[in-house]
Image (cartoon, rainbow over all chains, first blue to last red; front, side):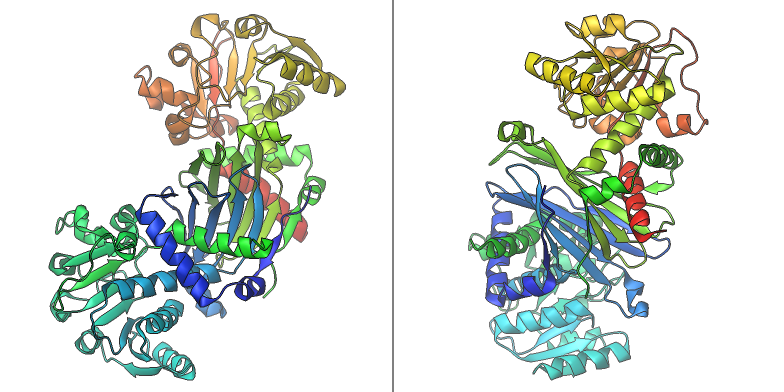
Length: 320
Length: 320
């Protein structure tokens, strides 16, 4: 029997363009919205000894496709103390004809990072006000960089306002981003950031609300992508009551472990008030109706995105 | 960054003895019984287009260990038409310090097969009557072979009685097993098998009960390991009412997708009547009390077994 092929990170990066990724992730969100992806609830393993971290397992099958995908993504916050990224992982492509593994994508978590950034940018574009001149970013980690880059690309801007708790991380963020040609300003606090931006992307692992209802300007679109377990929170639950449109990548996940969950469990809104981001991207549901609407996209990351990027890598490697 | 190491099936087989596996699986069942393993419910993906199959994802962490494990196991019944085994899979070892993958065990499903056989044999031994001269096997697939071999080894017998629906598969089973030194007889039906065996292992993918309450002799021990989803069934639910002892590898799993589930959902017995096989193996719970007891071990396969064998391979490869 042959040994399973491993596709390295360099090979993966070499076979995908940004356009490929945006287009694959957009199709994935649409397919998921249409119910064409069979993806059971993700597995979540919380660890606390010897280190604190979590591992998320997302898996599923685009109905009719000849492969299915299992994705493993770990987040260990104290990795920074070891000089390592908090995020790591891998993806597995398996045959939907026989169940056998067909390849391992040793992407070191990169595909998860970029499919998350692509979804954030698509969600930003889907609810963006007409005039966006700068992207507001809360957080200073890997996604704070990627979300800014991918959203700026789709929105055609090069200006970012950032807020982070840790001044050293903020400085590093500004240096990294200005080095890549972005104009970056610092907001003194979240309130200050909300006062100067009408498009905000939240990327933190916060455990309590940062974006408060009364501080958000009319006409603002917020993409909340940091909250991915029930113990995390970035948005004031009351903001969901005030929002004209709430988009979700997956309703069940967002209710279970997204920011939306806090508002639904608190009885502030019924869960059926949220609409599918995929159906908005497909043109089947309207997003922003009015220039003064506050709109929210709550993203928890869905298996459909992983399936799309992993399958695309495998197709490219096979030359089909 | 280094590419993830892949450990091949040959390397895996070369570094584990049967004693290693039995001992690792026994410790795993005991640890699980004691609550020392953090293993959320397994993920199950059902596929039906282009082929019918299922993929089970089991994962978890032995508290305090420096690694955790994710196991992927597929079962695609029509693989036989392609000349392939229905079962395939792989295991992943990840660092519990950083979350990063540390190696891929390209075991082609072999570790799942043997850890399942080892647990079956331990469960057979745990409830076996004093005198067992032959092992009764229902089914003729891979587990029908492995369960017979491993149980015979632990019970010190070399005689098997087999029943299978498909005469060609039965003939092939007998040829394979006699070729390995076992004395194998055919039972004409399940009733006939139950009449001549007091230790039975069921290994089929049946969707309806095969082992009926009134056909089981007093003093029989039954290990039910074929049922691993709610649509499968091997034992008459009424048999659970009659059983003096019901052992389970994991109570929640057996209620959710084992044979026990049919009896509990049917209101025939309360689920707390079942006891942990691990606690029996640890000597903390009694199994058979009486020579005429009917006893059952219901096995669904637990992440602890996968963690134990995968971690052991990785330790051996690292030379620790």
